[in-house]
Length: 410
Image (cartoon, rainbow, N blue to C red; front, top):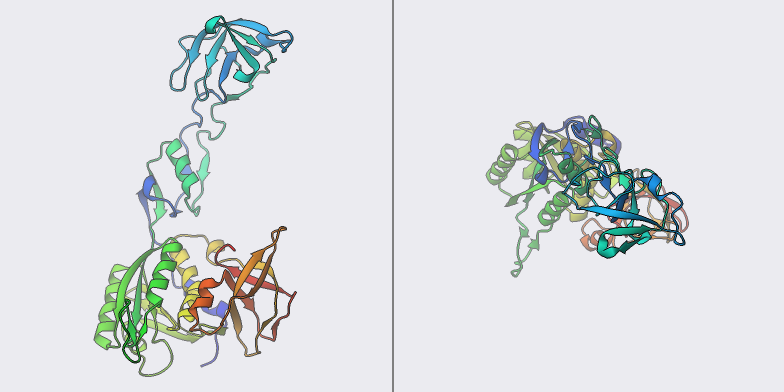
């Protein structure tokens, strides 16, 4: 079997998945979800003219010429607090004490901040030491949002600020793509979970916890389908359960080309699967297909390979399921400089080198190897900030530019 370029494999997978249906979700539960439709405001924000500061509502013309040396004295006829409109309109030659967020009285056109005033006669009058201009410290109605404004577009991912705006305009439900439920299945007689002693030939399983955590970090709903032994009936039952209850399934291990790899046997029987050898290192073996209409990703069993395969092939497809627009399916590489040499041998593959990164004062990145680069050496992957993309060839010398998939901030 020839090697498949990673871009071709990505295109194949992305061409066989589609965004999940749009449904209304309560705003309180919508953080991290992707809008399926535009959101249009029916109201103005703010809904009324309000004071931006504590001070005095005035007619600006009444403060003409006011200064510290020659303040203007005005009678104070009322106090206006947030949530409590003024008892009447302000007349020329008057002032009203006003607090931040309170409605500006009819007749007033400016606020003089309290720092430019002096309270007189126990609050019955005020000395104003600063000339006001019309509109000073007044928040006009609709300054933030006007009726008919499209506040957010389909494809926007909702963060805390978005939810605050939706609450402000009175929206209680939003049309979003629901969060994909993604099942994770680990297979292998040699794998065990927990901290007990290992028998000869056993290893503690890491792929399940790692993939479940990656899914949660990326905003998907992880579902643990368990650790399944190398038993055809058990693997069949687990994959069928995942396909019936999840929007996608990630299986790790058993995707090489050997005839005794039972995951391959089961998936070939249950679904329309494509088996590939991707032109990357690590994570060469990969499988993808549909089981009862549910996307199933066959990831390699070595822990680093499983994580790299998830990053390059599963994560973009799952983001498409979640409703992200095309420009946000893949993580964009950042430009960096190799602090030390990142060597490799020519072999026709793209190498993904685990690197730690340092950010300079000017915002640029320098990267160096995170440690052992074997596909079984998970510690270096955990230490790494990202993956340096080294095209076929001798690698990068110290000082050379490199592209890096930065998966977490340094």
